[in-house]
Image 1 (tube, one colour):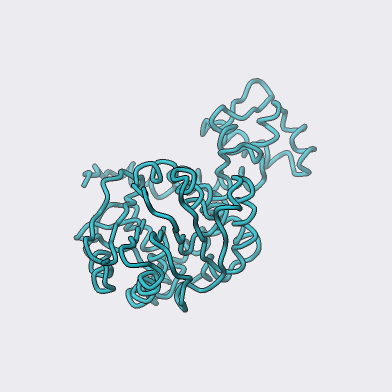
Image 2: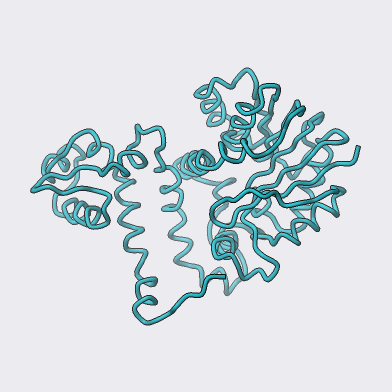
Length: 334
C-alpha cells in the first residue's frame, strides 16, 4: 500500500477537492464543451446560445480554463484537445454520461454520516428505481466505463470453442459486444431488467450486433435464468448485493451453465485485509449509500462464494485493470 505523507495542506486540499468536481459536473450538465469544441466563443456568445446568465458562466469558464479543460485566448474560450475528445457530446469517446451519474450521487455522499450512523442507504438504487435522467446517466455511464476496458478484457480472455455467453446484469451489453467481436463463433444474451432493453438494443444496432446478441428481460435474483450457456459474464453486479443475494445470483448463474461451462466475475476487489486498495474501499461506502446490503468484496470472499455455489478451479486472472478491478474465473464440473 502506498504511504500517504499527510500534512495540513494536503488534508485541506482533499477536503475542498469537491469544488473542482462540481465545476466539472456543471460544465458537463450545461454541455459547455460541445459548442466550444465546434468553435471558440466569447462569454456573451455562449450565454446567448445556451440561454444562461453571463456572470456565472464567465466564472465557470474561467475555472474550467484554470483546470486546463478549456483554453482562453483573449475573450475567447475553446475546448482543449482532451475535452474535445471526451466531453463533447458528439464525440465517440464521450464520458459525460458517467460524469452525470457521479453528479447524481453527490447528494447522497453529502449524507454519508447518516448512512454510517443508521447502517443503511439514503438514496434509491440507481439501477432499480431511478428517474429517467438517472437511468440514462447510469446505463450509458456504464457503457462509457466499459468502453474503456472491454476491448482489453475481451482480448485477454480465451473463449476459443465457446459458443454461447450470457451477460448477467449486462446493461447496454458492452462486454457481450466485445466478446463477440473478439470471438466470431460466439453468440450472446444480455439478461437485465426490462427498462434496460431500449438502451441495449440501441447499442447493439450501433455496433451491428443485433443478429448475434439478443436481450432477455428478467430479475437475475428471482431467476431462473435462461439456460444452455457455456460462459456466464457477471461484471460489477455482485457489489450491489449482500452475501445472501450474491449466493442466490451465483446459484442462478450456475444453473444457466452447461456442464464444463465457466463463470467470469469482474469486481472492484479488496485485498484480504479489506483496507486496500483505496477505490474498492470507497466503493463499498457508495454501496452503503445506495443499497440495503451491497458492498465490495475481497478476493477470498469472492472465491468462497463461488466455491459454496459449486464452482471449482477458481482463480484470479492476471489482467491489470484500473481502480482495483479484477476478474475471477470458476468452472462448472463436466
